[in-house]
Amino acid sequence: MRREAADYTHFQYISPLWCPTPTLVTIHDLLFLEPEFKAHFPWTYRWLNGLLFRLSAQKAKILCTVSAYGQNQLSRRYGIDSQKIVITPNAVSAQQMSLDKAKKRVSGYALDRFILFVSRVEPRKNHKALWRAFETLALHKQGFKLVFIGKKEWMDPDLEAVMQQSDPSLLEAVIWLDSVPHEDLWAFYRAAALFVYPSLGEGFGIPPLEAAAVGTPVVCARNTAMVDFEFFPYLVDLNQPESLEKAMNAALNDPEYPAQQIAEAIQNQYNWSASAKSLAQAIEQSN
Image 1 (cartoon, rainbow, N blue to C red):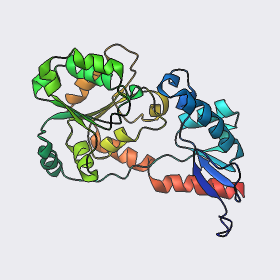
Image 2: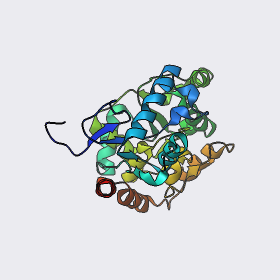
Image 3: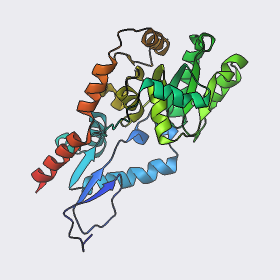
Image 4: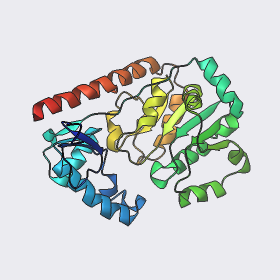
């Protein structure tokens, strides 16, 4: 870094204790410090990263995060003026394809009509809520499959209990895929009848934006960073009884779902040019 005479060095989350250049640090969120999410992170992770994230944030010449939620967390937890924390949102670069091409591609997985959730499996992602909603609406009896794409990193005991109590016909309608090729993922997004994201908390929340960017209806939880996704007509409070089921049913039967308007809003709000402009402005102001 010294040889290259860099003006700044960028680090994700943690910067070294000593750096020959000013540091630019991006910290996406501090979910592991919030009481409602602590149980989802090992105590060693919370202790070590709690210390290193704080040091990195407080030493940074420029501190960035990806959402207003993250900005509020960093300001509140680390005592940093929110005006000094730059929001540089993640961007969505959708791979567009026709619906016919997408359906043909996913037909190789023996799929036709399906509900999709893309996320690694862990308790915070709340797969069990979608499983229950799918079962309550009896969508498997209407010819739908439920597709989960993501590695089973930390299986939720509550989800396992729900699965064990499910009817065999429902179990046959649920498809688990650890991973799929990149182009297949975009085909899944495009071909899904509905994308559902019931996560209990996110520092940002890329998957629902990716699904919506290709024109697929989305039902998304309204919490943490995802409260910013106001363009979704079905943004649900998971604390309200049957809210997920009601939203899914409405979205599946909404002939006027504004898919094109939502895709355009995402493209306008979440693109790398806008984030780069925010970062460039912060660098200019810091000099």
